[in-house]
Image 1 (cartoon, helix red, strand yellow):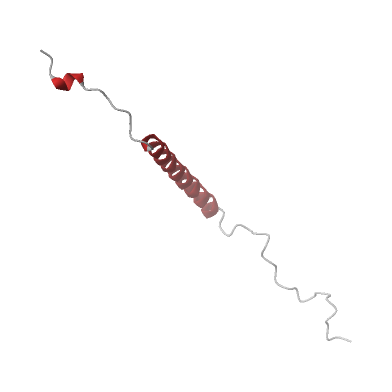
Image 2 (cartoon, helix red, strand yellow):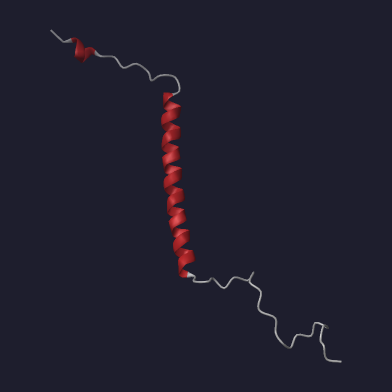
Length: 72
């Protein structure tokens, strides 16, 4: 005779369980990808030193011809 444990039927998952698994997996993937991107960007920025940014303004030169000279 067959025992009752061999004839188990599988019930469908509870409502919303599949979506929860999908979104959980998607969230893990997104976190992993963003972590890898963040590390890569950090390495790129770290290698650049000061970066030579164009937004930094040079110091004013003593020979500037801005029209505010004290010499008459």
